Length: 163
Image 1 (cartoon, rainbow, N blue to C red):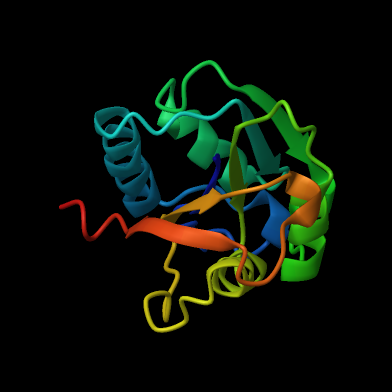
Image 2 (tube, one colour):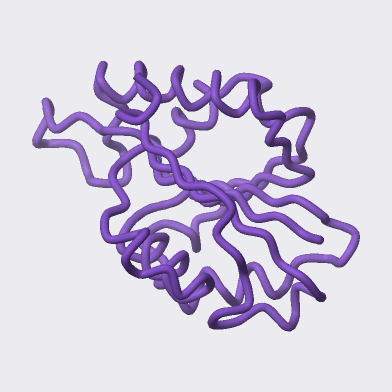
């Protein structure tokens, strides 16, 4: 069984309107949310072999805030994950090497949300995908076969759920 952790970046700051969207940092609320998610990952032993992270500043800072909660995963910062559609994210996951058993993808809405809904067909359970939300999906079969309805939603948590 393979596992996908889909993590939307934590709340970003809009304090400096001159910054390009890609360069917006986390807001203080986002830093606190990241700490909650990190504790949850550590307590539930949700680890990754590989982390695919958008190159946007807020996603990089979200990953940094997780510390070692995902374990000693290899990390790939990818420009193509910034503002990627669900189809683009799916293609990236399908290209994973088979030896990767657990992948964490840190990205943005609406692509991340749309991907989670499509893979799991869990629309009502995933009506909202707020900043800092984490969906845990299990997948049977090779990455190349990943597609609509081919994953099971194991858990979905938001920073608000965690306190």
